[in-house]
Image 1 (cartoon, rainbow, N blue to C red):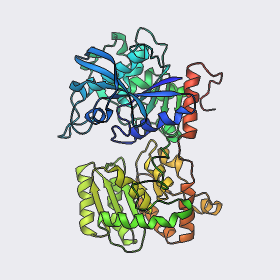
Image 2: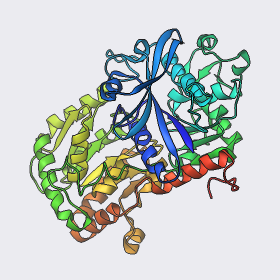
Image 3: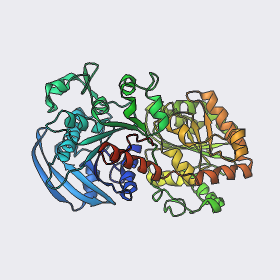
Image 4: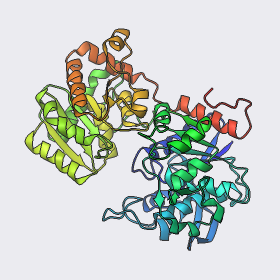
Length: 486
């Protein structure tokens, strides 16, 4: 089966968040299941710089007013088709935001082009290539199902994956006339959303199936609290909404062979993590006082609960913990962590920005990773933490609740605990979780059991890839079972 994955970023070519990790890992995981997946991605400078060779498979004179080429290549283990359209994608820095911090004003056009090319490819734009399924990721690819539904033929099947329903790709109604869609597409059953255009809503409305990145999140977004105004749509088509948990690339994230670590290790040699802990302490300028080393690898936003952590950081230090923060985001939150650094020199430190190698080292050396999100569709950092014996301390929300088993007395007695789970949205609950984590850390026997159990958890794509393969087969009529949950 041929599947075209449509994504605005894909690791290791371009990454701003977890979407890239998923888009980069899923093709390899599906290969052993009879699914050939190519990825359509915009030709940002970072992508073009890694492309090397490649073959031009189609030239377009008018891609929303600009010339473009489609380049097929094998790069970094991925089969990709790159939209080489410099007028749309040859821009510095973040794919979505200008250097001065504002969304690019033509993002509507840049990602309409992505969806339009995807639909055209699915309908024979390149001779000899006819994928049976378009798998569209997040709002940036959300118009592709609409181009299929309202196009001349709609026999191509489409799957829309919601990585974060908070980002809806919303634009004013004035852009609709330029989207190459028929007038009747501007309706509730199409791209219209509260008088404007929403690319995510479009994909959710027009796709054959909607998936989310965890079962719990699939339930949450059908409620007003988490549905962001789209819960009615989701409840109206509940039989075609499926939660499939994300996995991680267990080859790229493997503490036994990770070149980013000062010392590799396994669940059986977990004491070797101490060399990595010393390296983290040195890189962050922390002192060597014995005690748990907590870390954060995250966007610094209220959604991620970073304001709650700022309210908790003094208590964390008083409990004997240290905190290493890697991330960037809201200026006020960055300043707050710098202020905490100044108050607690040697106990708290922050490195702003993102560093892939350092994030690996932190997972391999820190004792626990804090993820106090207010909502979290799936989350990957807790999966990396499990894999590396960096005990996740997480909100009871979304995919965090699906993947981490709380170290409560019953779970400890049954020897199934893999982390610490607390109620979302409360600084007090976060503090109590930190205090409980510190207490567990000082019981070395219990702590090592929690670490080893996490390291033995199945965080791979194997099970989830099987579910996606079954879903593709179901919607293309190649299986008699109509329920992708079975």
